[in-house]
Length: 324
Length: 259
Image (spheres, rainbow over the protein chains, first blue to last red):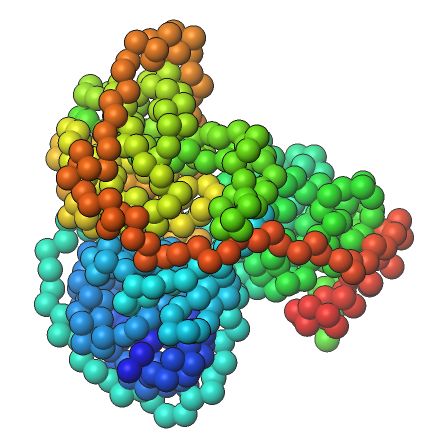
């Protein structure tokens, strides 16, 4: 039977959003393949994810309940997932495209001689194999790929597969026979700087600023709007290279490729590298004083105007709307 | 302290991508190729390590003859040796490429194996960790800060809005993120010196690998296509900022359904 196994990352006992998305598309693949959806979770509290995994359609939860897995490190997680794969014998293994999902997928793929389609935004089970679409050249082109190994693996692009709770009842917990290993790399600490700042990687809304801001201090216009609307702060390459903002915020070919529900670009002309990184966003608003700016070619709503006037006015409108 | 830096040669990020006649590859005609941008951070880190602790920096690339240009550029920046594994890397998948690179790395003295966090273009982010697994080495992915000491290294690994500080035994695989350092340009002296260094070449068979397995794609490109042009966008005049803000809010609420 062609089952699907989804690597689920837990945070405070809950399944992370990107993993919920992977479970959702995993359920559809399993239905098409005539198999069963199973989840994999690790850490002391792994079994606690059974209810949530069940709601998302998983029939089984492979739980590696060992304290060595309470924090993510590559080698123990790879060993535990390998054990789960041996037990479940899935046809497909999916990972949400988080930092950890993208760290683990290639490691485990090399261990079991499997192919991986990275960062897919469409995926289906067809003619007995996994077919996926993935952006390449930062979205300047799309590749449709067939993964023909068993198992076939893929990492899913965040926000590409909205979670659906269609299942009923908790998943059955299956114990993963994990024996702790002595890893060659160990976690010393996790640092969480910039408290309260959302990451662009998984955000539903991104507000980005470009060279039109004129100077570093004016990123406050972007931050205020992002804060009001509950979004993450993005930036063009020019502003990162100028040192106005940290590169973690950079959207584009040498930054992050993002596809949020809403992308607001202010003072960004739309260099090809930037467009490649954001044009797959579902709704795009551009604010720029140059009516010929290339960003308007991808914008659903283009506002030709002064960002220093329009952005604060929008921030006030958003605050007013939220107050009601 | 010896390093190997695995280099991918990719189309210039300014390039417009055209699809080739077979509908599965890009059209390389007229394309300018560059060292993949993240590999520049990897190379710079390796050169700094050499400057501090001595040893060799070997740059390694798998691909057609054009990749020698990328190796040459890397030598000009300060790499001391270069190894070109000849083959049509466009017809191998990530694991096939990783098998070639892992076998090639074994032929060169090394304590740290560097990659860029992804090859810009194919954007797989797979090969570095696959090589780590094949060699049985620890991997630290998407690194923004690195200290290499006696027999071990400490690296900062970028996460969503946070970072892990990880300590690993050598040899280890590092994949470099933008921000790890500020890559240098090649000096004239470097360019002249690089010309005197011979690029070592090997075939897949020389590495004791079965070409059939390397090119036996687990991931097969069925089709490559350009995204459709977006149309139907609306443009409004923002001269009256308050009115424009109201219009934007309406769009956010009614169409994006984001508030």
